[in-house]
Image (tube, rainbow, N blue to C red; front, side, top):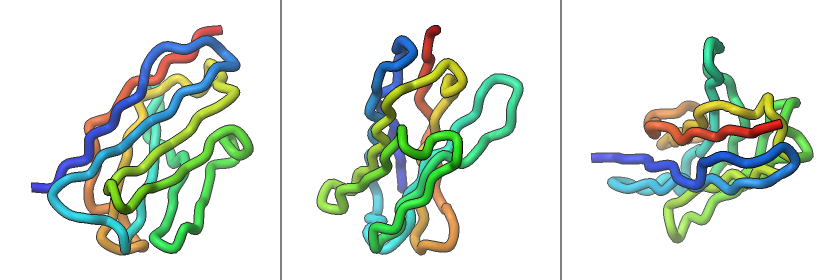
Length: 117
């Protein structure tokens, strides 16, 4: 059974930082894609960042220069370093992983990030 478990969310003041982790179990994703999405209250889930097996990264414009995605294939874990957080970053953050680089096959349950002004 494949599981993705996020951790590292919490409450932080504007301008602060958080580091989210996504631990995968049940299979490895070293040849696939890992990504982060978020969903704010009343809004649709949106893409935040992704990293492919070769290390190529992609970011939403709203987080470029502030967030950094990374992965440690030896630990089967992905990370999202979030700096200079803003109140508009408040959302439930979900990690996702794919067996290939073309689509996401598995999703985590999400972790809440709240940024106070």
